Image 1 (cartoon, rainbow, N blue to C red):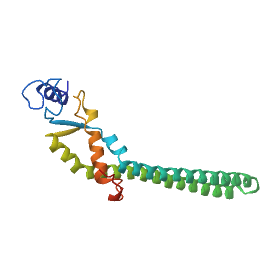
Image 2 (image 1 turned 45 degrees about the vertical axis):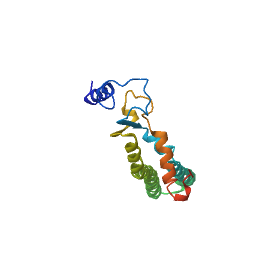
Image 3 (image 1 turned 180 degrees about the vertical axis):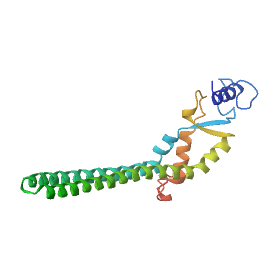
Image 4 (image 1 turned 90 degrees about the vertical axis):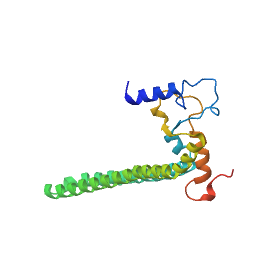
Length: 189
């Protein structure tokens, strides 16, 4: 068993106060929870902020795909034209034309790849910004629950009900941040 697994097992056995096993029949409101879990992927994806970001990036990705298809069509036509000219050209002239076409194709490929990487980077940056904006709200939830830590739910082997705060965090974050564009976008309580 790993050290992390051992620590989690001890925390589970000792219970939140560290004085003995937690009784299963106790409700989560009676037992202070020193450890909470959250689903960070869902926290972003299901939030108003995350939905806006994903919609914007999806639209930009679709535009990039349309641009790629248009470029592909243009390049296919240009390649066909060059191939048809081959019979009437001197080999050196054809080689120069073919090399220029290949260089053009490579540059377009590099440009399109860079645009795709930029979209991925933007998603990562937006996710990071969102989590930084959400940290104070998560801190409030921790204080209210008497928690010392919030763990990624994927890192926890077993958990008691009521420990995952993803839904509550989503509600509060949406109420505070809205879609991240304007505060007016936040739902009313």
